[in-house]
Length: 342
Image 1 (cartoon, helix red, strand yellow):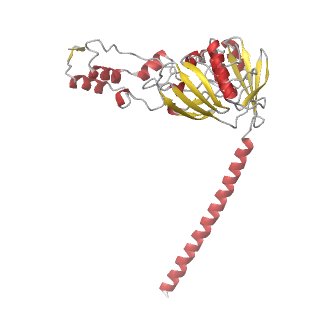
Image 2 (cartoon, rainbow, N blue to C red):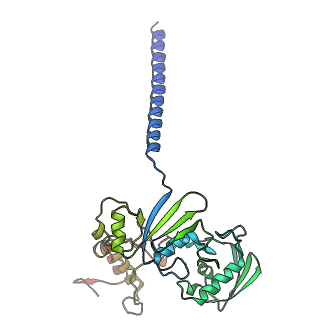
Image 3 (cartoon, helix red, strand yellow):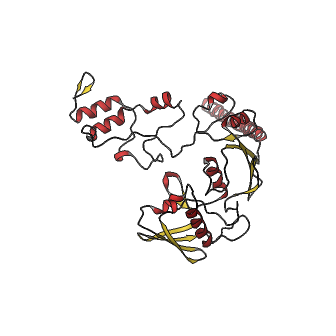
């Protein structure tokens, strides 16, 4: 009898727990659904963004010396080959490329590309762009200076002949390809209007719009941002907080390809010792230098290429470690005498 009562009590408790669990799950699902609905209601999608720039010269990416325009032009114009993360080559207007010999390259173009004026993109546009760059003073002049000639095989295949062999020449094919018609590209955005005060870029695939507002100097740019006349701007000025403060906006650090570095004179008797150079690398406190000299607005880089593929002597990253630096010196035969190496 007692065993029967125990079973009844046991199964009753189990049923109560199951009912409670079901109730708890349903309640949480209702709460989660309510939270999601609330968050959805809080999200506002903007189809328009205002970008501020200074030092505008021309929207032509071949002729412009403005870094801002170089960034913006990537939305309008495309290169033959893109250089992606980790410095890997990616398709642009070219879908395939191959090295036939030390001075000859074969490039196959994307047959489904059109200019923003609806004209078909062809190999003649590549030839035109290269000749155009050769005739102008351009930031891309070095990219094409070793190109001797272009041979058009058909509308979508070209041969590029070099004056002399050039290692990794494919990386030079990252310059924007332009059309004979001014301000027309093959990118995802086109120029819907342009004047001395602003440039309006319109997406080809949706209603997204970028309004590029042009300012005479950086002070007016900062004032416009503080007054919320623009939503975003890019600056290399590490002291921008002196003008704008540090509250009321979000910032994002973009890893660039400009860097400052120390170069060792390996012909020096002491520095010719690999152990000494390695010890110095471990003995440099990069974080402290960035904090004290660069207002903590720079990032640490282990080499000129910050994307993870290249490390000095295939070694690990040189994090500041003074004890390890001392040990390396001692292992290399050096001793300390009143803070001097002997």
